[in-house]
Every structure is written in C-alpha cells, then in structure tokens.
Length: 344
Image 1 (spheres, rainbow, N blue to C red):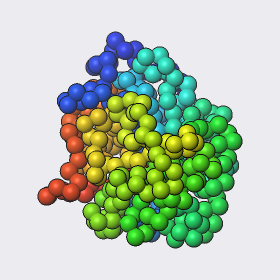
Image 2 (spheres, one colour):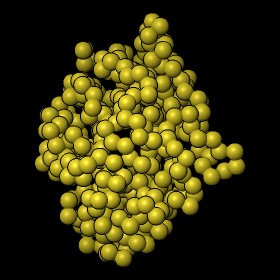
Image 3 (spheres, rainbow, N blue to C red):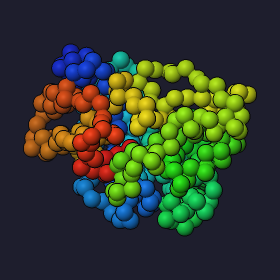
C-alpha cells in the first residue's frame, strides 16, 4: 500500500469540506466491520455476525485517503468491534503515515469494547494509533456481564483498559450508555473508577439506535441528573470546551483529579456544531447518525470512478448533510440501520 495522499490541495474541489450550513467537516468515523463479539442488550437482538459486507483493508485505506485529501484531520476506526478485523494493525500503520491537509499528522483513534485490547494495545500503539475509547457500561462485574451477555467480559475489558494505559494510548476514554432502571445505579461507581484508573469517563444519553424497540424518552438519563449525582461524590467544576465542535460537556472534580464527560444528544443536542461524517463498513457515507439516506461511495469506486470523481462525490454529499436530528419530535423516524451497523 502506498502511504502518500493521492492529490494535492490545488486539485481538490474546496480547501475544506464545508456543508450547506457552514459547518466545517473534519472528523471521519469509519466502521471496518459490523460484527461484534458482544451481545449488549440495549444494542443487539443477539446476533453477532455481519449484516453488511466488509471492504478490504486496502479499500478502506483508499477511501480514507480521499477524505483526508479534502481536509479531514481526525479519523476514528469503529465497528461493530474493530479489533475483530484482520489487518487492523497494518491499516493503522498506513493511516498513521498520512499527513493532513495542513501538513499535520492525522489524529488517529479507535473505539472498541475492549475485550481483545489486552493483546493488541501495544501493537496498535507501535503502529501509530494515538488513543482508544472503550465502551464500558458498568463497573460492577455482575451488571456488566448482564449487559454484554458474555461471561468473563468484565475482567477482559478491565485488563484491556490497563494495557492501553501501559501502552500510552491516552487519554483513555470510557463510554457508558446509561439506561434508567437498568444501569443508572453505576453513576457514582464510575466517579470512583475515573479517579482510580486515570481514565476519562463519558456518559452518553441513550439514543434510538438499538436493533430492538427498547428506546423511550423515559429511559434516558439526562445530563442535569448525572451532574447532580456526580456532585454527591465530590463537587464538580465544569471545564471549557477545547473546540466548538466538541460533543461532550466536560467536568473535573474539585480537587482536580479525574475527568467526567457527558454527551447529551437527546436533551441538549449539539447538531449546530457537528463536524462529523461516517463511512459504514460497506462503504456508504452517512452524513448523520439519523440519516434516512445513504450515499454509496464504495459502489462508485467499484464501478471504476477515479479519485477525482470520488472526491467530487464526497464534496457534493457533504452539501446534503442534515441541519439536525429530530429525536423526540412528532414524525421522528429511526434510521434504517442500528448503531452497530452504522459505526460509533
């Protein structure tokens, strides 16, 4: 695989990808599989196999290069569970050699359930991965395994988190999706976990992206409640955002030890500053998690489109990015794919 970009800035349709609402798009989420070795009850109906075809590793690399040549500065590899893909370390190595539009190194991250991370953290860091985010919905072993429906999963993930810290894949972020009456009793425990394990814990409001029909507004645990409950452990101090498109409201404890983030797309939507676009495991562009339309980039590549044609297709697609989602509004429709098949 060649490591250089396929075009110079002068050949691209625009200096940066900007949608019709004036938002600069610089963050690409790429799902490299929709397979997962967990069967989390709020996400999956129980099947673990792929529902959609997977591209070859070299095909993902070509498509990602095109996005980077158009101004993408951050790439996050997701799934499903990306650690299941053969060739992942080689893909990371190739991506880590890319330079962004401004000449800076590509910011390269990965989201994982952490089950296989213990053995892969060091090789991924050596290949050029910057950091990891681990999905972890409980700090109590019994609750955790009731969610994943995989025996031994809690200890495997905990070992993975510690291996990632040892390898230097920091700051490590822990993502917890809260569901009222299900795992919302874990909030205070995660406060202690953040401080003990030196990780950033991020709570995410439950969105209607599951395979089943579990979601209702009443299940959502809102930002204000999480902040209030965290404050019972130690007083919180809100931190300033690092950039306008940051999705998490960030807090530290009053003594400065530990960080908590809250991502509240349901009760405090951040669509107006969205900087993201997604590429599914079968090569479709999704301009929003809740898009009702997919754009078949891979289909055009497979049909013989050259890089310049593909760049123009990406550029035109970004112009169609939705202004916002419509969760909770009359007539809201769930997307055609669930989260595991879109990519986190």
